[in-house]
Image 1: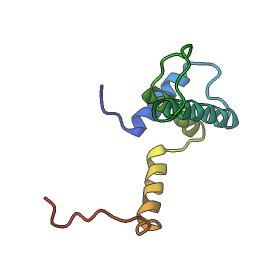
Image 2: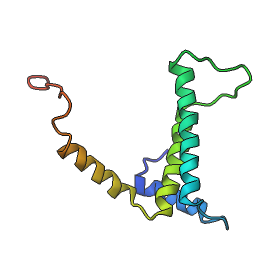
Image 3: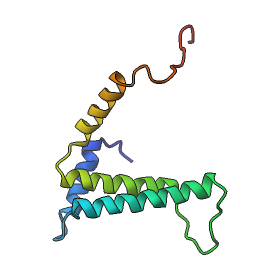
Length: 113
């Protein structure tokens, strides 16, 4: 597989969605879908790391698949609202580098090679 940028992913999703007359769902519907996908991811995490085993009748899904589903819907939401996810990511990382720069205990890497 190729290494894709976030911009590549946004373009790929847009090409996929643009082939359908329905286009993107409304932002409110996509928020509901994000919530649904987050719940499915939570369920898989709980099955894998938690105390709740899967039922024998439940299909096989993976955490990778659920994160992929969540990412797809997030891209759909961003695309429908004309949000450049690269710029959005840069904004949030700048916030963490400035506002939260001293919030956490940093690993001391001095003297390590």
